Image 1 (cartoon, rainbow, N blue to C red):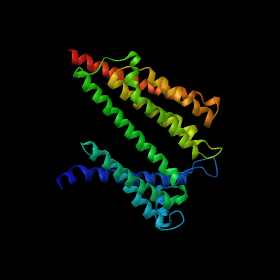
Image 2: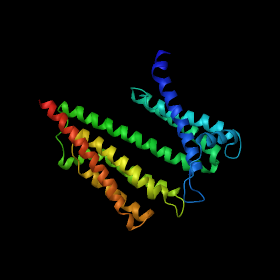
Image 3: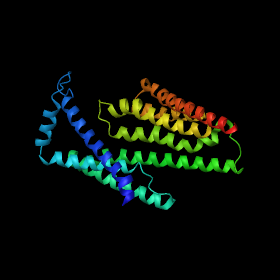
Image 4: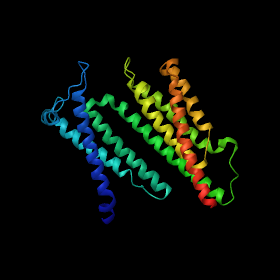
Length: 277
């Protein structure tokens, strides 16, 4: 009970309140979007949110259902900031249980607002996010084991251009630069490339490339093959979902991964220097 009060409850409440706040912000911005004109009309937020709470989007139960479900999603995301377990099997079981609960909550929220037919539009990206997180954790553990073996004298020195050290990250690069774009392309609205044309190249790819490059650099130093792999993996996606005019997107993810790797390599070099001293 003491652990529940000290660790779980603050994260549940914080995450839930953040989820509700994001919902209310979305409702207000949705009202202000220029659907019928080219000008934003920012009305009094209390009037907008009050009207939504009273009438909803079509039926009165929608606001209450949305508030409850968004609080639950936020609370579940907040709980995910805690380590699930120390042992392997227990960690896998609890992580899968968290994925199942989150999928049920997201699925119910999507069904309430958009209908059952739209469930894949929300559940497939959610599954990809979990896959990326799991793969990232696996890569981190693999690197830690390799570092322990190296300290014990059980592993050889770094390979040329750190190609062996880069291999565990190649799967993450493939998911980020090929599987994720193709999955988003399935749900893209024809003529309005918001997911593939805006969200992917200007948010998901830079953030994913930078953070994965940073993780690799912090563990193994400068690994030039990883940014190159990110850029090359994205080339087929450009021609499958867009055209040659979007080839600069490859440069975006390459530069993001390179910047993250250089920052991580600097951190790695600093730690090694301190260790020698």
